[in-house]
Amino acid sequence: WSLYIKPEYLNVLSPNILNSFNNTVLSYEACDDEINNKMLSKLGFRKVRPSILMNMHLRYYNKLLYIDEIILSLKNNNKLLETLNSLYNYNFTELNISIDKFIINKEEDLRCKLQNSIFSSSTRVPLEIGDIKNDIEQDYYIEDLALFIRLNDIAIGYGQIIYNRNMYTVVNFGLIEEFRAFGLGKVLLNSLIQKLKNKGVDELFIRVEDDNYNAFKLYNWIGFTPKSIINRWER
Image (cartoon, rainbow, N blue to C red):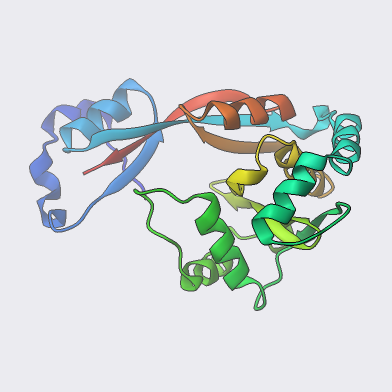
């Protein structure tokens, strides 16, 4: 969680210092700078995945008119309607888009399954309901800033804002693959931004992996700009 070394002592570091942890995997995240990189390399860590930390000042947020236009166009989008009907074997004739707060002690299983579907990969360990409950119990969790986006009451996306290390940050944000590229991500992200802005908060952060071009394009469109590079290290 924390790792601080005075620069004048960097040369005395070696991988042997952490030998007592050799039976497990240590991971650490730090800004991309010379001191952090040297410190972690000398302790035996290996850089595995960089990400971009982005931020925006909510007082300059000005996408509401665009979002209204997107929602109007989505309600008449036949391809989106066909995708919904095909994927869930329904016969809807019209679309209704809604943003709803995640309900504690009721929708943990739904959120667990949805996040596993959104973030499914061969290198990701699937979430369990206990992981969702653990997230809710953390000090960083903000109950009214955990949101589903639904099409005709079917949850197809999720996102939340947490307060951690003195930063409000969007996390666990995503849509089921079949519903990406329609503009639904913009709608969900706008709702999170508006709810946080209404609390009087000015600055919001989000992180994106450096090779996730589509996500970076979305965040940049909504108003986020790159602030720094965060490296993930493992030992």
